Amino acid sequence: RKIVLTVASDGKIYWGKNEVVKDKLLGLLIGYLAVSSNKIIVIDADKDTPHGVVVEVLDIARRAGADKLYVSTIKKQKT
Image 1 (cartoon, rainbow, N blue to C red):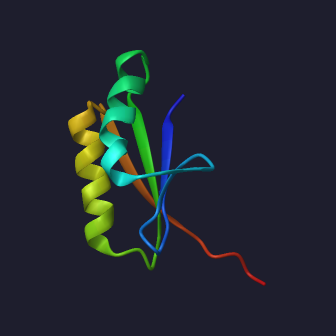
Image 2 (image 1 turned 90 degrees about the vertical axis):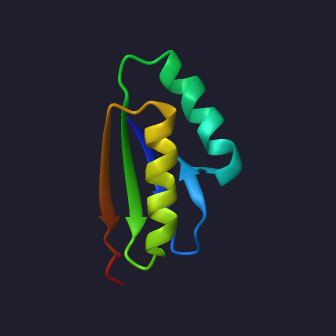
Image 3 (image 1 turned 120 degrees about the vertical axis):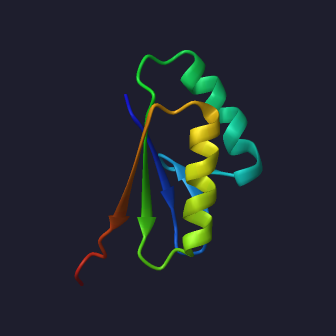
């Protein structure tokens, strides 16, 4: 399965529904990718997320060994 990381507008990072501290993300991804045959990471970012945070997460994912990286934006739900 692909890994989906969500970067919220406040800069918080989530792996699924679990918040991940940025300082621990590299180690978690390295461990997961080491035993996974699927090395695809998708980064969902809120349109209001600071660009620099998304770039940092992309760099961490690349350093962890992701074969493919995708970035998508989260559409706000209509109320």
